[in-house]
Length: 195
Image (cartoon, rainbow, N blue to C red):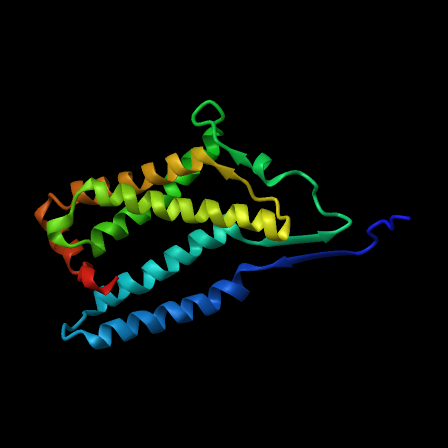
């Protein structure tokens, strides 16, 4: 006789418990890399590195937290494949699309601030934005598979995030054409070998 599943475990993992320690690890790694270099960093360059860490963890907080853990009898029986939307543009949610673009604009700006001067072009920005976005989507899928959370994967998010990174990159590139703003922005630029 088959016994019905009678137990369940439902919990919520808040961002602070995971991202707080991750930020400390990020700071330790950055300080370790800086100590190994002979170059001195200005206060503005430290601001760039610290705010970069805060930004990256904020994106993770917005896209993956809180993690809803649903195990047991209340577990959703829907296949993980159904959580993937592979159809671009036709299935777009315009509000989410625009918000994803806005969320990734700072990512393009930070790429400008940490990119080597001889490598400043749109191709690495597209690749970097796309890879970061893919990592987020994979994490969301894993959250569904492991914790049975309500996250899903959408190809439109990949497009919007990559577009946002490019918009941020070209915005700061355009602003940097003005000598005053270029001098102001340059004080925040970090040597690319730090990352």
